[in-house]
Image (tube, rainbow, N blue to C red; front, side, top):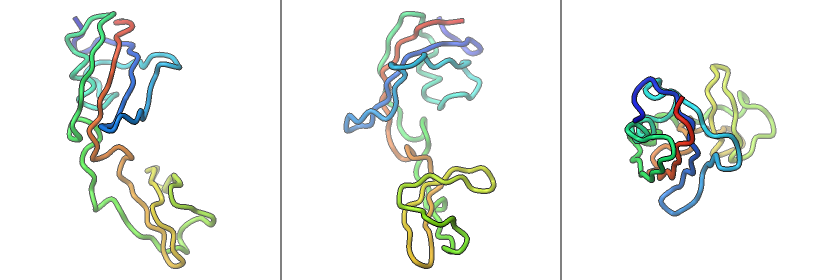
Length: 134
């Protein structure tokens, strides 16, 4: 039985409520992480505990157990003079402090950026298979 401190290797498919797949490990190596070490979102960690190698599970995580709720205070307009040239809506940009943000609007005088995780505010459903417990 998987418990805190174990290293696990899992295959997963992550879906939104509308069925859209946002990520999957099925076409690559399994995801490896240590249970309880904060390497994955909290709810994912918790749902793997108690499983064994070879087990499968499907579970849904509310935003507070995934990437949190969207926060309006993480959306800001910056003067266009302070932004790189050629930005378009949807671009991902790394700020000087290392944070990654998404450009959500480009105007003549300002660029609006969003520092929320792209999956913030969304419930996530995972289909997992425990491949190995190390």
